[in-house]
Amino acid sequence: MSTTTGDLARFSINQETVRQLPLPELVAACGDLGVTGVGLWRAPVQEYGVEATARLVRDAGLTVTSLCRGGFLTASDPDGRATALDDNRAAIDEAAGIGTDTLVLVCGGLPPGDRDLGGARERIADALGELSPYAAERGVRLAIEPLHPMFASDRCVVSTLGQALDLAERFPAERVGVVVDTYHVWWDDRAPEQIARAGEGGRIAAFQLADWCTPLPAGVLLGRGQLGDGSVDFRHWRELVTRAGYGGWTEVEIFNEALWARDGREALAETVERYRAHVL
Amino acid sequence: MSTTTGDLARFSINQETVRQLPLPELVAACGDLGVTGVGLWRAPVQEYGVEATARLVRDAGLTVTSLCRGGFLTASDPDGRATALDDNRAAIDEAAGIGTDTLVLVCGGLPPGDRDLGGARERIADALGELSPYAAERGVRLAIEPLHPMFASDRCVVSTLGQALDLAERFPAERVGVVVDTYHVWWDDRAPEQIARAGEGGRIAAFQLADWCTPLPAGVLLGRGQLGDGSVDFRHWRELVTRAGYGGWTEVEIFNEALWARDGREALAETVERYRAHVL
Image (cartoon, rainbow over all chains, first blue to last red; front, side, top):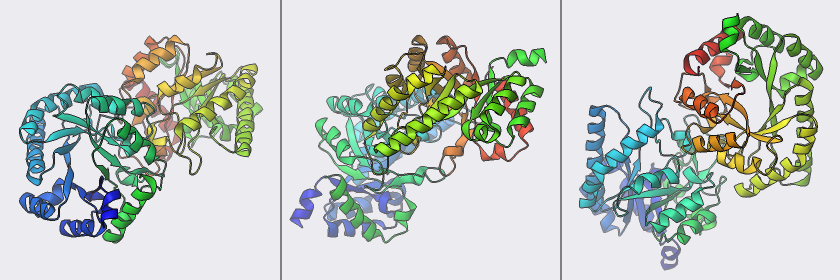
């Protein structure tokens, strides 16, 4: 087990990768495989209970590497904005409650009929100004995740690490960071220099992995592929974040119906093997 | 008709937008609607015959604004490379044969198992070095089209105008230009400065329009939306290319099964109306 834990010391499994496993089974499977980090999602945490989740993972010696997700901060109407801010304060409370210091933000797309990406990005900056002090008081850092440009209209108008850093750098580094997710940035020839910039500023809040596979499914959300099945050179990206000074967790986050249809423990074991084969 | 021709003076319909119309019917419909420019595709041109196509469009007073497409220049094996170069020389011959000065290039994705985007981009540069003199001798300019990053692995490793210009600028401007297609670049906050860069260098070879609509269909290729149905601010992009000195055609290129299922003349008439409503 000590060998296993050794090479998995920085490995975290995002809960959504094996969503077929209820939380207690996920925690047990992590123990059996020597996995010591998990990224959690709000809905299953709420279902199991924030305090019960905190106790479960603490008793198992697991670190919660992130909570997914806050965000959706681009509403242009006052009611929509107030609702989003309330929901994000709740997400921050939940992050603090389960003992993670990182709340991943999917910042939001364009409101219906709106075509102004720049305006939407400014509304995100406004919202971060409101939320980041609240989060900091609770020991939680907001982590802006740039999403692949194919999500720009409906999920996240922040499409590149450069844009994410332009937003994050308006705030102190300990309050607002960025997520480097290979699935979202692998195509971007400017990402390496932006990772260096993020590292210099102490802004890399999370490093997430999924592979890029085609053809994409309808709606594209569930296209994230198992490590090794696609076009991403994971060692290249791991080296880039390491060279930028990142020493945190590497979280594997895959949304993939074929993976979800399988036995959850088997899917988790495969993910660990793929991590060893393609990332380490 | 003169009014019609007036405001459609720079409007071109890409043949694939109304692929249900055989070439002679497309040409007739263009005449009826006052459309004076068409972008053609290799397969239907080959089917109708290059000389017959040239005669048909010339007799109708139509300008062929581009031929789609050459490219797929990323093969790493010598045979694949030679085949691609031969095919591109044929495409150049066809472009010259139908009397257009613009051959649009979809540069190609990653070969199977290859994860090196930078290497693939270099192979494109090599191929352009071979092809651009051949094209120039025939009065044809190669137009690098950056494709949306969601196509980076399987269709085109050139994902941004910045990357396209980095490639194009290795060659004389009259030999290699770039395509500004709203569908591919609308999300990119750096695209405006890259359009200015392209304009300064005389590199804008074509300006193409489609709207960004979600959810994307499986495979994503046929997601291009009718003007006005999605998130693209067309006037904004038209102003950007105009301000950059571009005075050429505006070609509407939509791949959309719902549009293809309709009466072709009706779909073309709607496209013209949408152009008036959302672009002019």
